Amino acid sequence: MDAGEEAAGSVAPDTSAAVAHIAGPPPRTILKRRDFLACARDRRWSAPGVVLQARDRGDDGPPRVGYTCSKKVGNAAERNRAKRRLREAARAVIPGEGRPGWDYVLIGKRTLTATRPFTLLVEDLRLALGRVHAPRRRRKN
Image (cartoon, rainbow, N blue to C red):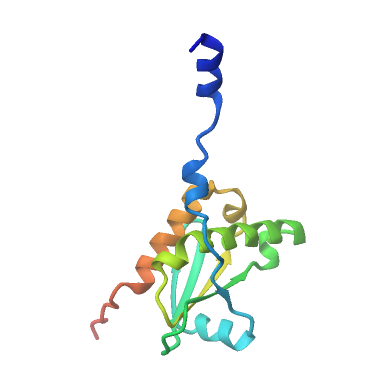
């Protein structure tokens, strides 16, 4: 191998890790407003790049995911970009770590959802999922 081949090999980015965690079909989507509102009334966790709301539907169906970004996130193009990134993060995490019979709503944050490195956004979602599924602590009265 000459110096040109060696240099070309070191310049090429390693995309195998980035592509490997996105494989698979997207999770089922929440479409009805009442399901979004039901998630809002149950469990919630805020991570740096995303807010996760979750609820147990009480059935054994596959997990469902809803996505939302308010106008605080930005104009339509910025909101759509943030939601695309949330969809890809959910596609990477929910099939392996989501629970059957649960609904999840991912809420985009003002600037972080669109600008945070994707690997950190995926880790934020994993952290939030772990927190909403952790046993609830009882409050002392």
